[in-house]
Image (cartoon, rainbow, N blue to C red):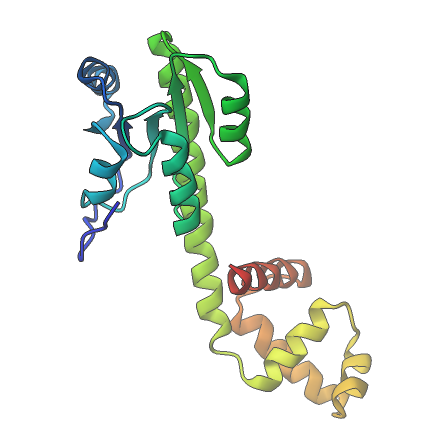
Length: 214
């Protein structure tokens, strides 16, 4: 799943369909097109991985059993790559252990063929909403991390202690500075981080921590 050097600005949802049955690929593409959703169809996981895809919100509709690498193999590979695109699995076998494995690995749904058109559309809608929310959260986190880059080393220390729940006089004692100095640094932290309250600062500090751990 290669991305182009200059991703298209188009952010309308895109549904990726992978099934070795040409009839199913065309059928799913027609169903999605009927509700205004764009789809790209592939006959194998290899074909998908080699494709140059735009960076857009969407989901992956994936058959479990495919020639070569299976759908579950692809899910494992995408997880290892850090690709969090929601996956809707399809199967003609109703394999419960397989569906449990897929869901535990992060699949959003597991549909048994033959399924109703509306079942697929409902699953795709949920998956796209999830991916859109994930992307918005990721963008917000990137913005917060960028805000934190403007903090001085001392302001970073003050922020850490404020988030830990220390009062100004406790922070002053911890850092060996005056309480007035702490108030100045604290004000700078709140302004630079665009924090509306201590609770908001705590939330942003947690997002920064999660981003650094990722």
